[in-house]
Image 1: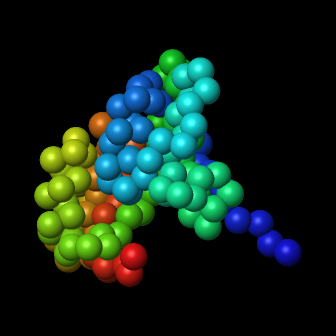
Image 2 (image 1 turned 90 degrees about the vertical axis):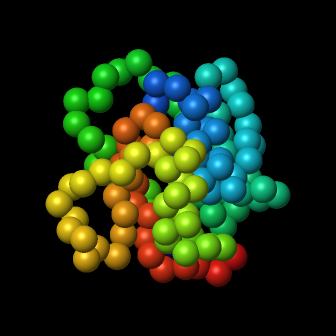
Image 3 (image 1 turned 90 degrees about the horizontal axis):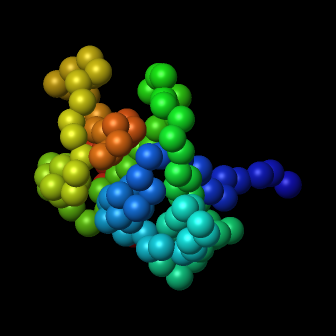
Length: 125
């Protein structure tokens, strides 16, 4: 038997802001709230489902370097350009980390500066 990822924990200054952002990006809903923690995940699934949930944990610790883990997302109901426009309107910003114009992905940052990539390949829902 192997293990699988059940949730991703993201320490952040503003869990409310990131819960709204990532819920809109991923089509997730709020699953649980405990104190300052907010857990979001796929509608109707929740913790332990096939897709991992995201637990947003409040933290006042300053981050000295960028996160060593980032999230990759793929569009499911539109092409990459349309999804890029949508995600930017939600509060993401584009980053140039030297990926070059020929890259098949867009490097972005969420509202707290956490890097993630928007890949070109469209996934089935």
